[in-house]
Length: 346
Length: 244
Image (tube, rainbow over all chains, first blue to last red; front, side):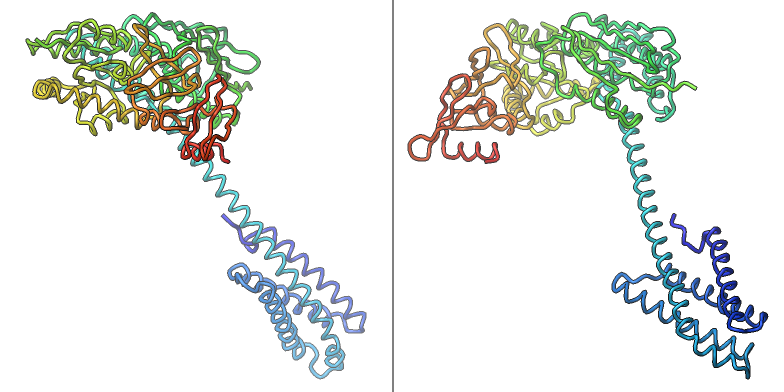
């Protein structure tokens, strides 16, 4: 939120000091012109407290009303009126109070141009400062709003990416359960439980909360168990976890789309046995995970296979602000995805 | 007796169909296939009356498999989720089952098949055409004798009309496919292919030179050495593609 200048506590302190300085200077000048000390002090005090108040009034007016057209004209008129008002109001108060029937009244009359100048300069300054502050605040506001918007849309996108559970997977799993209910009710029941557990996992995880690789693996195993039932004996998965890597932290569910992808390439591309290999190790403050799956090189990719990879890349980018964390390559008839998750150690 | 082939990459999904079919004594399952390649062979060998077909399968999709058949049998599609395919089914009134489906829904599909056997075969042909029209092609599946070839688009040099067929010139040879030029024209990505002539669609990256010929006609020279006539409208399209 924009903070008006007058809402700043620091401002009032500076402001007060500034006017005290003016009072001291003016008192000295008046004394130098031969005025006795006490009237000189009172005159200066009243004059500059009044100017200070008028400046605040001007600042207030500007804060709450600023024309969109003829700004310069408006500011000039405002400053002139305020200055003239100040000078005459000041004299109207001070003269009858301090100098009734003295010579000073005439002498002081000659100081009118000086007073006008001092008033105009001070009020002019106030106008400029107010305006400058306002612009600064507006800009800061716009920046904050922009940052907010970006954060909100980033959150929404991350949420959406995480939610993109392949409907194919869900409906085909239900279909498998449907088949098992009749022939193998026990297995059907087990699969319902696995599927529920898997779905619950996708629902409750928080985006920014990291989980250990071990947790993610448990979740992956659940997913693979379900896929194994769907595809029978054709699917195998091997986990090869290096030292320390199980305790490494990763964003939840980042591996699952990768597995889905590996299965898609591996299984939908071929009808033989498929083994998906997953290796992990910690190196150089990064958790490095490699997923390897066989595929037939001469088969053109099926529609939509790139989506899983794209969504992981996007998530890594949104979370870490980098797009060099994932590499995709082909080694012979193996498709390899390697990605690195930055680790922070205290 | 109706002969049936079930094509699905998931064994359990085939189980369901078999199990539901038990209540129909005049239906006999003659083959089960894991993918489109097996299916093409099985269909040639058994000449089934009806097939149950999944869309997303290994190697080639259900639609691509149908394209390879000379005379496709009646089809009941069984798929889990495919927004695009479902739209196509609805538009062509071909019966489809959304997994998981109930026994009642299955029985309705079978009844529908029995009532309108011939009609449904024609609808399937129309469906395959419409799918090709709506979905941009990413590769071309070709049947070469007993072999099935999958040709990625970048290997296609050009397509040439040949009566009811289209000659597909590729890096690896020339193949015939029963399909219309217009369905290829609308299915192939516009940025990559342009119809230079009534009888020719050419891969833009293959063009090396365009020379004027008599009157308003042109001729295009391809990397492979072919000379392709360019009609007046073909020339306009080419200019639009190349931003000239």
